[in-house]
Length: 224
Ligand code: SAM
Image (cartoon, rainbow, N blue to C red; front, side):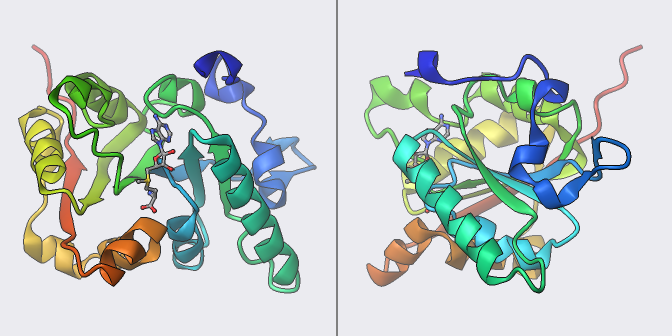
């Protein structure tokens, strides 16, 4: 349970050097970059791996609640780094075990993130389980807090009911606005997200549907 999970008291207490050693500047004792892309419930890490070369200037973090899955992704990234040591590839991706439904502001500063991905989240089909869904009004306010203005929330699922649920909650939230199908078809991350994740590949094999909805983080309203 969460009791065994460790959380930093604040983003500055987090030991990012451990996750991204190549981005630690020994001269200043500081990280040269901070995480700007988060994959929430990253599963086996396929999205991280495909995003890595596309966003080589960004630090990308997968968050995953299952211990074994997190360990698997960690090993996968270490192997990729080792096999690409000459080019220094895959240094910009990492994974963290954690419950993304809790304490996100302990990991990220306000307006730190540029992109958040929610790929094939657990559907929690039963009505009484809906509150366990990863997109709810309360959590959206937290996601809006860690996202910068103009930042993007990406969602994809094969479950129509969940797609409608996520889209409805995001549309109703004052800090998010839905992006058009034209925007979606021109964005490279949508393309990657459709094909990169293990769950997405499974849906592809089973010839299932994939429903995408993307939202931009709006500016905070000016309170007079
Ligand atoms: N995004 C991956 C993909 O598309 O292949 C994995 C999809 S899988 C159906 C959902 C993942 O979210 C699981 O690996 C699960 O352990 C993880 N998860 C569920 N709730 C979570 C939470 N509160 N925080 C972090 N990860 C969570």
